[in-house]
Length: 283
Image (cartoon, rainbow, N blue to C red):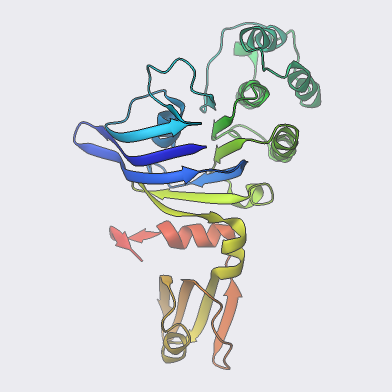
């Protein structure tokens, strides 16, 4: 279990995380979404104990998290992670030697699946293959919390599909909390169970993907008809073109009417409406 209580992180006068209170209590694959600079990496590093927060508290499995913690129970890999410039097979072996819970068989199987040359040194790998090695080491650690920051950077389309399969297989073999930060929204939707949206250092949304599928809609038509259909519902965005209006809602489905069109929102469109700012404000 991950518990954050009134967590704030400042760099100088700038607050990157703002009074976040959140509990991630159940094993599952979670997706962390946010625009560039929203605070995703800062949040993950804070949970991992890679940096101290300014105010509040973070615990994982009841253990307080800080840079002084000896064992956080968290395995974290950021994008462009670096390793010793050793052959890939040697890196996997070292990881297994320092962690008695390490699943070396899983790591070796994934190395074969992704056609990683175990003799090739880390610095000689492509960006995608470097990222894959880091991700395999992280998943094979069998820690109770796995944090992956932009793990598909440098992957082509086939590698991304294989990655999502690997993620699902790893979780099935060893259920725990896995949080994945990514910009490629629609692809990961088939794998995740819950969604966390962070914007400007605050958590805007934390719920199941099922909630988005059953409660996120666009309602389009003449302004008067759309306003009537969405009265009392939670409107998260609006577009106007001429005399036509589209409102984006997160609520119960509106009642069908002749003068309006109701469509479910994709995960990407829902995210855009939740964090889309114009002129410095919320749409």
